[in-house]
Image (tube, rainbow, N blue to C red):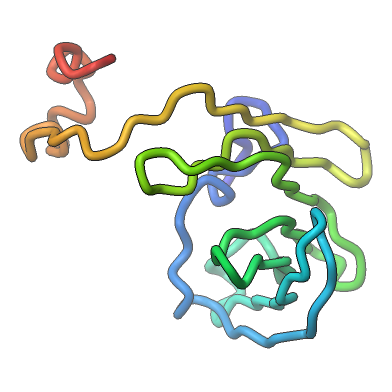
Length: 145
């Protein structure tokens, strides 16, 4: 829980969530970002497992990439936050979300996330993904671009 470095994002927003942690229901189709999307409602199986009571996502069926996500906290009728995808591009065979924003719907404040460079398939050694290496950035400095 908690905000990520004072932004409109919670730490939970930055983590990958396993589909099995939620009950999902297809609500229909709607256009978002110029794409006819599948609208998916996701409700946590265990309400203590998420800061959100539910999420509604607009998913591009061709790429499985969300175009918009509405986040509901205590009020299940009105979202408290909205994430919007603004730009994506193919990068080395992978879709990369290059411009997105999270909007606090009550205050209007927003946090924009922009990815300028993303590198994939860098053949990094497994030793970089130990607890020790993740805690000591000097151990991975030689692998930085």
